[in-house]
Image 1 (spheres, rainbow, N blue to C red):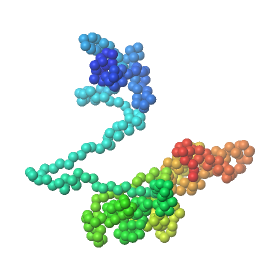
Image 2: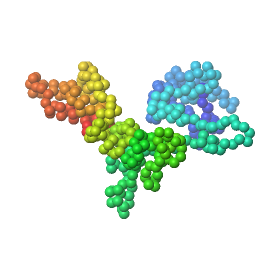
Image 3: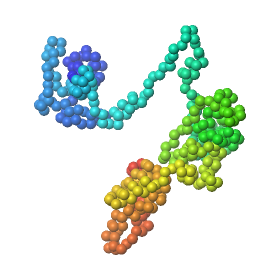
Image 4: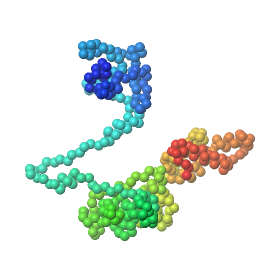
Length: 368
């Protein structure tokens, strides 16, 4: 597969834009395939002196010599099988893979059609089929952690009486409405509308009646709770509770489990068994201690606590602190000549400093 030729050989070629080839031909000759600055490969294109092939091509009655600078990447098997020019390139960078996946997941265009009798025009059905259900995005924030807008004149008022959010309004709704206490946070839009003016939920007045509850109507509206990254720990665990606990009355109520108020949302998630325990990570570090150096064990531990979010990182560290401090103990024994020296708090502190340095380099996070 030969591109063009274009450029000075053929300025009228379709690929020529502003006097240059839009496909970047002719390419540079190179002895080996390498990765370019943009992440795409620069394929091996051997010169004639490096045993590269050349061919003669007649262009406008003149015979010219074409070398590897003009060859398009291709698969001979595919070209022969499908009897077509098929450009095939090797993708080896995040940039190129992202480009492919982006196009795969773009989705397709959709049209609704049907066969109906002549002069039949059901506008209501057509309108409903062409609409998507209403989607209401729900806020997630810690107590007194919502975003508040204010001017100089109303700053004091906003501080003492901040406007309700969808979350605080849902708490208020659950305190005053028995049916709301049966719902998850994300289910509220199905039965209630959000009034932006009053910042409150109101029961729907039309829709499909709910048989078990008087004066309650259901719709196809959908609630979507904003995503929270696990690094925003307490807010992440609050969101986890909101998608599992029905009818919460307040921030304190949602972290109350079996009548006991938990100190943190994470603790509440643990007591409700919404989080996995650390058995897997304990086993991983135990296996590592049998064959790895203390530096390798510290590195593995730093990766686990900074990227995998174990349930009890402090307890996990206490279970394996000796194996992570072994090289420090050995060094001090050699320096002092005391081979009976045991682990000390200073050694453990040095081990923690080394682990924190690793966490900072991996995820820019301190141990806290």
